[in-house]
Amino acid sequence: MARFAGVSQVTARRALEGSSLVAPATRERVLRALDVLGVPRPPAQDTDRSLLIGVVVPDLKNPVFPAFAEAISSRLNKRGLVPVLCTRTSDGVSEANYIEMLLAQNVGGIVFIGSSYADAGPVQGSALRDRGVPLVLINPADENADAVQISADDADAVHQALTHLTGMGHERIGLLVGPVGHVPSARKLAAFAAFFKARQVPSEDWMPLVGHALFSMEAGVLTAGRILRNGATAIVCGSDELALGAVRGARRQGLEVPGDVSVTGFDDSLLMGAVDPPLTTCRQPVERMADAAMEALVMQMQGQRAEPGVTPFQTQLIVRNSTGRPAHRPRS
Image (cartoon, rainbow, N blue to C red; front, side, top):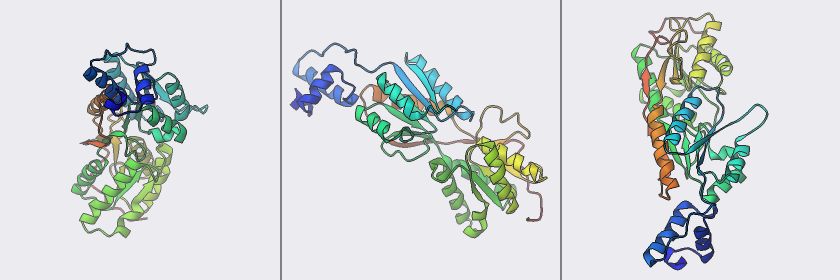
């Protein structure tokens, strides 16, 4: 039977025992070999994966993370699966701690939101791969070529925002994104550079208008201030939190939004239509992305192969009152 399934006798025995060391796809291949040979399948073992599904987020301060967590949890509940919310805490509980706890419970799968299994550390990441734990990453922060990734189309979002702003007459447009090395931010920067290259704008004109910052309002205030001092009349931001910081940074310089400066965000988080001014921002299709993530997760849980790589989802530019035609003001 082991030879028919194309595995070693040790792997075949572990598969029949329901060991978590055997990937679901390999176990299914062994069971199908039994079917072909006319041998009854063994009864389900207590070691089968649990119904617990880890939902890992970096924090709950960024409103888009709870939005995704709620959408994923709702879909898990409808399938009879139990979501376990795992988020970093101020007292030092990290992704690595959660991964160890989830593995101890023989977790059925994990959905990473805004982070990745690489954040869990090399030991935990290796354990996830070795055990074949079903994984799906939503908007991962770094490269994960061997994992299923559901991501917003960062490049298209930047293109939409820039088309909107240049259409209103803005020429000196800044870009405020996350830290260097953050993959979604790198995609946004590449799209920003491509946009102006296509219009034959020299890189020395737009590079001083690019800023990297941690994803916080306070960091947005400081970095936006530098971008504005370099003469930007508009700023495209990589998150709504950074955009709110940019609005505050403009006001600290005595500038009005959108009278003197236009600002766009990314996510369309809860209440962005109620801030002052209501924020123009690119809306992530949270529900559709959650559907795709759930489909990929369930496929893996059923022993099927889900193709690794990035599946991009187009965002929608929601135009509100934080953008307008540029005022002619002197460069600082």
